[in-house]
Length: 416
Ligand code: HSE
Image 1 (tube, helix red, strand yellow):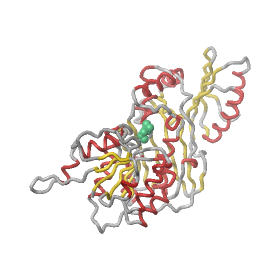
Image 2 (cartoon, rainbow, N blue to C red; image 1 turned 45 degrees about the horizontal axis):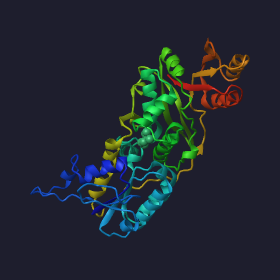
Image 3 (cartoon, rainbow, N blue to C red; image 1 turned 90 degrees about the vertical axis):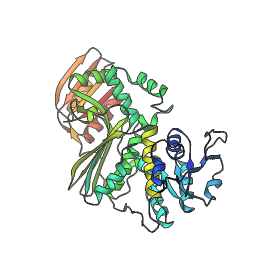
């Protein structure tokens, strides 16, 4: 079976190196008893630009999708172009052409999960998407395994390498958000348009995929409550640090009976906690099952080699599947009540910049409508408040109203 690669970008080139250029041990899986190599190879690479140089190997660059769709020697397509519409259409067309598909595209999987799984099943082929969540962490496969025994009730994690890199760097160096984002962009840790990462879409797509699988229901990106992390300032790192906390960007979902609660937002963890010590491009994902309890998975959540490793793991799974083995199917038909954020409770840290004379009174009065103030520090033009325990939905509503009068605020719930 030959393989086609859609996209020879960062992850695509990593996959190409593992499969075609003998980096790693991939080809060893196919060495026969006389040590002759017979490993499957990438024979075609779809790129927008035909002049892409792949070096002296078997792969040929093509620009016309038909060269792949109509090539019967290609049985497996690795879709790594990113974006939405083109890759979605290509994945559909490949499945319809009875080619197995491996992808890392979380936007496409989270938006069209059920449709693509159905298409794969109808056409007797397999769709694999391990690299769509958690980069190199084998979370999709592990979740499937645990679901054979457990009812999963909770998923929680640091699921984005870019924002974790930014927050870690800000924490290490006391640097501000804008400078650290610019640094992350200059060294390739953040994209030129960082919206999906810093506004929470990337995390919510990953959380949607895991939650859909775990709770056997279609949960879309738009079902997830999300708040970006662009309001964190060096002063928040300093103040929360002095209180013994670290700021992290967390995705969290809980299923209770038929009620689904989700959130993606900046939160505070105690400095000594495991979560606080997951730094840079590393991710951590915790799943809780009724039999196993809490399991945590840690590793590189982004980057060329780690993500390519997950992609090639899926490729190997398909290549090692015996012809008559039925691929495992997922049930996503359960109807859940999208119940918001009220289950997430904790003390809150709030910082507000005081511009007008009356701003301090406004902030304190607004907080008092929902919680007791436990700590209040006024420092020149800023006020810092730590509240009593309060449910997330009530605090979020309060801050929305407050921001109409005092726009420059940052707040984060504290995980004790
Ligand atoms: N931008 C994503 C991240 C890439 O930083 O985690 C991996 O999904």
